[in-house]
Length: 279
Ligand SMILES: O=C(O)CCC(=O)C(=O)O
Ligand SMILES: [Fe+2]
Image 1: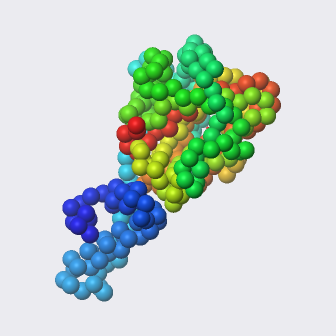
Image 2: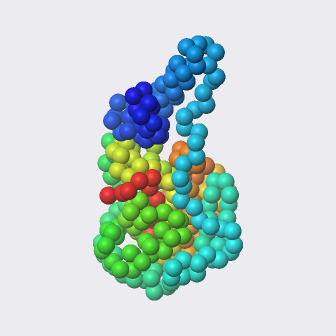
Image 3: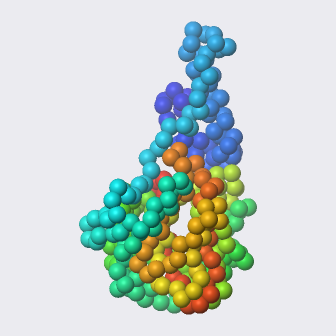
């Protein structure tokens, strides 16, 4: 109540209540909505019963990263990118010519042999654990580590109108024959105890860039089972999708995965855009 009176954002309050570990996100939002209703009632001449029913405090749209797809070419400070397709809801955009072949090769070479078996975030305790649903290998490029990665970071930030500081470092994924990442969500689940510490560091993953760093001879598409959509890797292309709605709430239509590679090697770099500064 005191926080509402001081006009904190309801979503920030709900996030911090959830982060405290004492409330699930759902319980935090319900408690705040209830406090808003009581306040609205108190403000109407003391007659709570006749107070207008307050809409949820969470209905206001919040700032989102966005890509300008009003034409089929996008100028970034150092490269012209092509818009290959746009799916409007949920938003999925395929971009061409985002990276040059040389940039793809430089990023792959930079990671050399530093790959280890990929992990996922355990729902119970947030630990990084090996999972049969994700059989690829992974490697990270930390911020400031490689000039080529910095340049691409700036390009993606310009494309998405979002600060590079509010993004995770590049995560590379390498898939050999038969390797895959079964359908999953990229958003962090506010109601999962294991995801809460990750949410506390940078907030929700609002959007995903998948950069294709290699061509794949056969298989290895990025699939969206709820949308009937499959996108095949092409070196230099980037796939973008929003993981949440405009209120920053998880969108369950964004279920997606990496189909098994049949022939060749698939290498991608993930870039996740967060609500807040990350790291
Ligand atoms: O491999 C792909 O195409 C998608 C990878 C992915 O969804 C992820 O790493 O979160
Ligand atoms: Fe994913």
